[in-house]
Amino acid sequence: MKVITILGTRPEITKLSLLLPLLDQNFNHVVIHTGQHYDYNMDAVFFEELNIRKPDFMLGVGSGSQSQQTAKMMIGIEEILLKEKPDAVIVFADPNTPLAGALATVKLHIPLIHLEAGCRSFNKKMPEEINRVVCDHCADLLLAPDDIAKENLLREGLPLNKIFVVGSTAIEATTRNVLIANKNVNLIKNLDLTPKNYVLLTIHRAENTDDHLVLKGLIESINTLSELIEIVFPIHPRTKKSLELNSFKLSSKIKVINPISNLELLSLLDNALFVMSDSGGIQEEAAALNIPCLILRNETEWTYLTDAGKNLLLGTDKKKIISVVKELIEDESKIQKMKNVQLNLKSSVAEKIVEVIKNEFKR
Ligand code: UD1
Image (cartoon, rainbow, N blue to C red; front, side, top):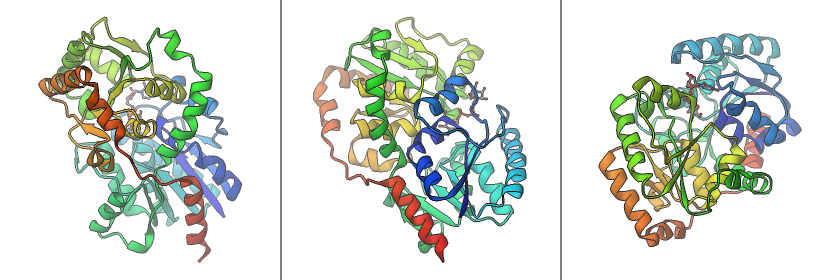
């Protein structure tokens, strides 16, 4: 069976790091990289560190508006699919890369497998929400991370016999990759940080970076909080551009660093007191490492973590961010309470994905 996997951004690469070698072992497996992320530290470093084999095709689409980027990818992907004639195509989660992959695949009547299916924020202003709904509705096989995602799919009328709950590839990859991270990475020392005495911060989502008022509120709250605790902020290129465009200044107390590799991020996360982030991936990575995550958004796809009390949906309101974070810093029992929450997580996720694909395509 010939299977093509399409990827192109940081989270796809890291979350697929355990699955890609298994797909190589079990199928005639071809990998297409769209080049949505292209800077060395947003892309190549992930392949090197996680020891992932090189993609077979590199489209190199780069930046552009949502439609330009998606359209360029579709053209490149279609050409390869016509040549390679796969039996199935795998796309992962919700960036523009899986959207383009799903559309190109389904229009050629090739079976589509969507991993991390069924996640919903119910916020249509997020490009990712549109992407994941389209991917799910194009897919012939839906591999969901949890029961909530499965319920979302059923509510949208997708057929029960095409949905399989396999668990989270992110949690599984984190649990393995943190072991490599803590052996190899000296970032904590190089940045002169004391373990459990700093907060990790990431902001990159369009609804936070591209809205002048939201970004202003976020920056002002972070600047205020940097008087109370050390903050480390690996900055995404999109966020850096928005700060420059709006002339927003970060306090000199904040340790602003360039984007870092996944292993470096895991090591910073594993040693942090807690993390503040609008990333989808970090919410699960934090849970895997048992580090409380305060989510800088008004909704989350990972409600199994917020419902359990493991993560906290903080929002983007300046006053609320400052008061909640202050309380956490002043009363450590609140952090401990989040850490004490037990989760019932699935294991052998990558193996299960391969097994389901084999079974479903046997028929
Ligand atoms: C994308 C995904 C998001 C994922 C995130 C991880 C979409 C809609 N969103 O967001 O789900 O969590 O990746 O990082 O696909 N840029 C660079 N160098 C790079 C990549 C991007 O400079 O290597 C800049 C470009 O100016 C680009 C901007 O960042 O315009 C945004 O990049 P884009 O690929 O559109 O989406 P992300 O914000 O990275």
